[in-house]
Length: 261
Image (cartoon, rainbow, N blue to C red):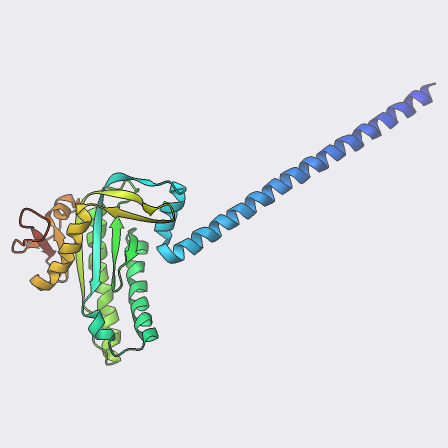
């Protein structure tokens, strides 16, 4: 009788063990599948991020993905920088197409490193022979004006090194103009349902572009507005320049250039 009971208990334990083992295997399979799916999803997201980043820039790609395709905008206090290569068309008139593109890509590669990697800015768009960069977008940083001005200074320093190489090769040095302005802008995805662009709009942007163009008139390389000067958190020696009238602004514009520029 005891042997029979023992046998029944052993059979019951084996059955329960097999059932528990089977349940454990199924649980492991489900969790493994879920983990593999999550890993694959992350790989796909990283692929999208990298692919998108190649075309619009990593920082812009991160902003677009963070907004998950939402349209509309928010108002933010930022600093806007415009950079332009002087006489680029005349410089490339005798170059073959691939030579002109190679020259421009090399210049922009160096500029991107300075703006985005060294100073945390965001190159929002390339403008043929220049670009527009933003400082302080969705970062909560209050020193965006300082970062923009420091980036402008380092752009000039890196350009000097580039020009040394060009001179050694018997080529003309590159000249650029840099315009910086600070103020409120609307940040967001703008366009149609079929074609959106993450960008900023507002008078702050327009004035920054006009300030960059004033470098030609004033014979300077880097200009900043009074708004940017007032937003600086660290003191810097600046030289005031003659007041300038620009389209779309009711009052003459105050501009400044660093003493080192």
